[in-house]
Amino acid sequence: MKKAIMFAFFLSIVAVFTGCSMFEGYTAADGAILKQYLEPIKLKELVDKPKNDIWIVDVRPESAFKKAHIPTARNFPSSQIMDRLSELPKTQYLIVTCETGGRAQLVIKRLEKAGYTRIMNWGATYRYFKVHEPVSE
Image 1 (tube, rainbow, N blue to C red):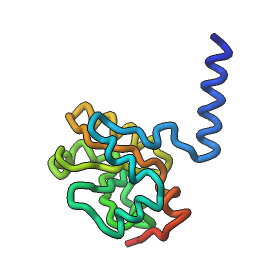
Image 2 (cartoon, rainbow, N blue to C red; image 1 turned 90 degrees about the vertical axis):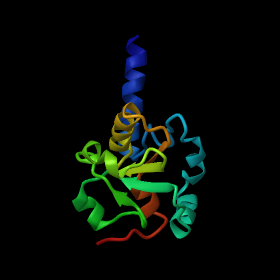
Image 3 (spheres, one colour; image 1 turned 120 degrees about the vertical axis):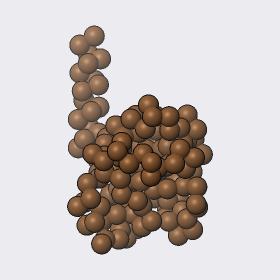
Image 4 (cartoon, rainbow, N blue to C red; image 1 turned 180 degrees about the vertical axis):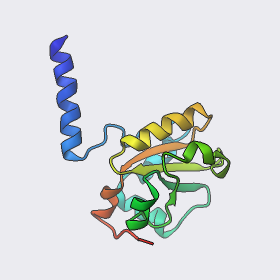
Protein backbone atom coordinates (compact mmCIF):
# COMPACT_ATOMS: atom_id res chain seq x y z
CA MET A 1 0.00 0.00 0.00
CA LYS A 2 2.82 2.41 0.87
CA LYS A 3 4.47 1.72 -2.49
CA ALA A 4 1.26 2.60 -4.34
CA ILE A 5 0.93 5.85 -2.44
CA MET A 6 4.56 6.73 -3.04
CA PHE A 7 4.21 5.95 -6.74
CA ALA A 8 1.11 8.18 -7.04
CA PHE A 9 2.96 10.96 -5.19
CA PHE A 10 5.95 10.56 -7.52
CA LEU A 11 3.72 10.82 -10.60
CA SER A 12 2.12 13.98 -9.22
CA ILE A 13 5.53 15.56 -8.65
CA VAL A 14 6.69 14.61 -12.14
CA ALA A 15 3.53 16.12 -13.64
CA VAL A 16 4.05 19.38 -11.75
CA PHE A 17 7.71 19.74 -12.71
CA THR A 18 7.28 18.75 -16.35
CA GLY A 19 4.22 20.92 -16.79
CA CYS A 20 2.11 17.94 -17.77
CA SER A 21 -1.50 17.88 -16.82
CA MET A 22 -2.87 14.55 -15.71
CA PHE A 23 -6.20 15.81 -17.04
CA GLU A 24 -5.10 16.93 -20.52
CA GLY A 25 -7.51 15.37 -23.00
CA TYR A 26 -10.18 14.56 -20.40
CA THR A 27 -13.62 14.78 -21.98
CA ALA A 28 -17.07 14.91 -20.45
CA ALA A 29 -19.78 12.53 -21.67
CA ASP A 30 -20.31 14.15 -25.10
CA GLY A 31 -16.92 15.80 -25.55
CA ALA A 32 -14.96 13.07 -27.35
CA ILE A 33 -15.34 14.86 -30.70
CA LEU A 34 -13.12 17.63 -29.30
CA LYS A 35 -10.10 15.31 -28.96
CA GLN A 36 -9.25 16.04 -32.59
CA TYR A 37 -8.09 19.49 -31.38
CA LEU A 38 -5.83 18.24 -28.58
CA GLU A 39 -2.57 18.89 -30.44
CA PRO A 40 -1.52 22.56 -30.79
CA ILE A 41 -1.37 22.34 -34.59
CA LYS A 42 -4.97 21.11 -34.71
CA LEU A 43 -6.15 23.78 -32.28
CA LYS A 44 -4.46 26.36 -34.53
CA GLU A 45 -6.57 25.06 -37.42
CA LEU A 46 -9.67 25.71 -35.31
CA VAL A 47 -8.37 29.17 -34.39
CA ASP A 48 -7.79 29.97 -38.08
CA LYS A 49 -11.20 28.62 -39.12
CA PRO A 50 -13.46 28.93 -36.07
CA LYS A 51 -16.62 26.87 -35.77
CA ASN A 52 -19.66 28.51 -34.24
CA ASP A 53 -20.45 25.52 -32.04
CA ILE A 54 -16.95 25.20 -30.52
CA TRP A 55 -15.56 27.70 -28.03
CA ILE A 56 -12.09 27.85 -26.53
CA VAL A 57 -12.61 28.84 -22.89
CA ASP A 58 -9.65 30.15 -20.90
CA VAL A 59 -10.34 29.94 -17.16
CA ARG A 60 -7.23 31.83 -16.01
CA PRO A 61 -7.65 35.17 -14.22
CA GLU A 62 -8.44 38.14 -16.47
CA SER A 63 -4.97 39.67 -15.91
CA ALA A 64 -3.22 36.53 -17.23
CA PHE A 65 -5.66 36.30 -20.13
CA LYS A 66 -4.97 39.91 -21.12
CA LYS A 67 -1.20 39.30 -21.12
CA ALA A 68 -1.38 36.33 -23.48
CA HIS A 69 -4.09 33.99 -24.71
CA ILE A 70 -5.00 31.69 -27.54
CA PRO A 71 -6.61 33.69 -30.35
CA THR A 72 -10.44 33.43 -30.39
CA ALA A 73 -10.45 32.21 -26.76
CA ARG A 74 -13.07 33.57 -24.40
CA ASN A 75 -12.14 34.39 -20.84
CA PHE A 76 -14.32 32.92 -18.09
CA PRO A 77 -12.12 33.08 -14.98
CA SER A 78 -12.59 30.06 -12.74
CA SER A 79 -13.66 32.34 -9.89
CA GLN A 80 -16.54 33.73 -12.00
CA ILE A 81 -17.61 30.92 -14.29
CA MET A 82 -20.41 29.50 -12.13
CA ASP A 83 -21.92 32.99 -11.87
CA ARG A 84 -21.75 33.34 -15.67
CA LEU A 85 -23.44 30.09 -16.73
CA SER A 86 -26.08 32.07 -18.61
CA GLU A 87 -23.28 33.08 -21.01
CA LEU A 88 -22.24 29.45 -21.62
CA PRO A 89 -24.88 27.56 -23.59
CA LYS A 90 -24.96 23.83 -22.85
CA THR A 91 -25.26 23.26 -26.61
CA GLN A 92 -21.73 24.63 -27.18
CA TYR A 93 -18.67 22.42 -27.31
CA LEU A 94 -16.15 23.86 -24.85
CA ILE A 95 -12.39 23.41 -25.04
CA VAL A 96 -11.21 24.50 -21.60
CA THR A 97 -7.66 25.64 -20.91
CA CYS A 98 -5.71 27.25 -18.08
CA GLU A 99 -2.14 27.57 -16.79
CA THR A 100 -1.50 23.86 -16.18
CA GLY A 101 -4.77 22.00 -16.80
CA GLY A 102 -5.59 21.49 -13.13
CA ARG A 103 -7.82 24.54 -12.78
CA ALA A 104 -9.54 23.65 -16.05
CA GLN A 105 -10.35 20.23 -14.63
CA LEU A 106 -11.87 21.74 -11.49
CA VAL A 107 -14.04 23.98 -13.66
CA ILE A 108 -15.03 21.06 -15.88
CA LYS A 109 -16.15 19.04 -12.87
CA ARG A 110 -18.32 21.96 -11.72
CA LEU A 111 -19.75 22.36 -15.21
CA GLU A 112 -20.52 18.65 -15.41
CA LYS A 113 -22.48 18.91 -12.16
CA ALA A 114 -24.39 21.78 -13.75
CA GLY A 115 -25.34 19.56 -16.72
CA TYR A 116 -22.65 20.39 -19.29
CA THR A 117 -21.48 17.38 -21.31
CA ARG A 118 -19.64 18.80 -24.36
CA ILE A 119 -16.32 19.65 -22.74
CA MET A 120 -12.63 18.81 -23.10
CA ASN A 121 -9.68 19.77 -20.90
CA TRP A 122 -7.10 21.02 -23.39
CA GLY A 123 -4.52 21.51 -20.67
CA ALA A 124 -1.95 24.26 -20.38
CA THR A 125 -2.05 27.36 -22.56
CA TYR A 126 1.74 27.27 -22.83
CA ARG A 127 1.42 24.16 -25.03
CA TYR A 128 -0.12 26.44 -27.65
CA PHE A 129 2.29 29.33 -26.97
CA LYS A 130 5.34 27.10 -27.53
CA VAL A 131 4.22 26.48 -31.11
CA HIS A 132 2.03 29.46 -32.06
CA GLU A 133 1.88 33.12 -31.15
CA PRO A 134 -0.50 34.18 -28.40
CA VAL A 135 -2.44 37.42 -28.58
CA SER A 136 -2.72 40.07 -25.89
CA GLU A 137 -5.00 42.96 -25.08
